Image 1 (cartoon, rainbow over the protein chains, first blue to last red):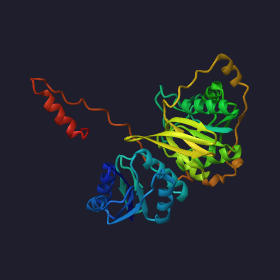
Image 2 (spheres, helix red, strand yellow; image 1 turned 135 degrees about the horizontal axis):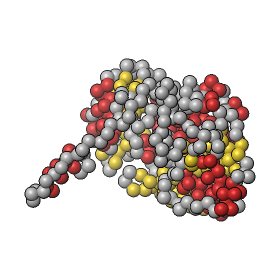
Image 3 (tube, helix red, strand yellow; image 1 turned 180 degrees about the vertical axis):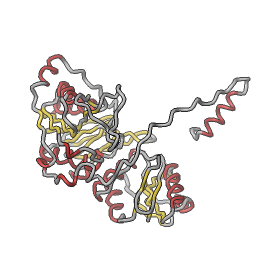
Image 4 (cartoon, each protein chain N blue to C red; image 1 turned 60 degrees about the vertical axis):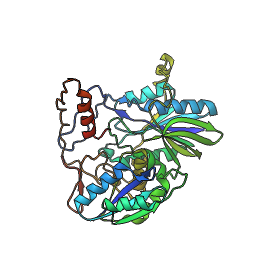
Amino acid sequence: MRWLVYAEESGGKPSTISLEMLTKARSLGGDVAAFAVGTASESWFAALGAHGAATVHHLDPGDALPSAAAAAALGAIVGPGDAVLFGLTQSDRDVAGRLAARTGAAVLSNAVDIQTDGSTVTFPL
Amino acid sequence: MKIAVCVKQIPDPATPYALDPTTHFVLRPAEQVLDDTDRYGIELGLQLAAATGGSVTLISMSPAGNLQGIRQALAMGADKAVVVNDPALRGSGALVTARVLAAAIAREEADLVITGTESTDGYAGVVPQMIAELLDLPALTFARKVTLDGTTLKVERQTAGGYDEVEAALPALISVTSGAVEPRYPTFKGIMQAKQKPVDQPTAADLGLDPTTVGAAGSGQVISAVRPARERSGGVKVKDEGEAHLEIVKLLERAKVV
């Protein structure tokens, strides 16, 4: 399976939560990719790679709120066998909601940990 | 302007929630209260309706029970309510909830949809954007200040680092944070009038939704087990012998808050 990590930048640097999610995804096995939203920067992309992203997809939403464009772009690249990880910031939640409505996928919210058997994602007790 | 405000009846937060031992769903008593955080969206809707000569319709999905929570919202001044009341919806996840609410809103042909940011018994925080996507609307979320300039909405949107100034043309959806406006208290007259206001109670099928695509079966997720939250441990006592501040800084660093 593939983990797609939603990653925003703040001040040209990767957000802390995006690196935490990449680290978690790497520990779960499978492919890891980042979906980077913000102004392009080689050092930012390199940091995402250094934390485990084998592929970085990039979207620059310009001055617009990212939710509609990011959900449309993510919707075009996700498929069966993908799990998309979001943090709990305002934009993360917005994109997660839009993406779920586009794809029909369930949103499991407020996870404190993740387990997987390769086809099902579970929050362990 | 026709304004739809999404609201939710929830079990009284002052009493511990009971869970169904088999399904792990929250048991919903006949007597539920209005989610307190919904009062901000209702207030904003009432203010914008007053400014534009419009109307406010409450949109909700839950076992209707005795409608106490909905009457609380009507008592603030909303004109009418639509409560999608259908046992087949039991166990619906966020996306099914959004599909049901969107179907009810579409029937009202609203120019503006107002929601809270998340419910006080679900906390997913994704339903507003889902509704916007399903209705093909722009969404200005986490609004801490809202102004309407003709048919353009201007919003200060709360972010982790401050706020964004964003705007969208109607029709649109906004989600409001607690504190965005000062909710009014229902008057005695409002409480009396609320008892007479129309409350439509359609089923999912009435809204054109296939009953097999709603409820737990249509939601793609299962609550496999639940357990009580861990109790907080006693913490760490730091004795001050002149150097306690250094110890406290170390603890804060370990907790990653500095």
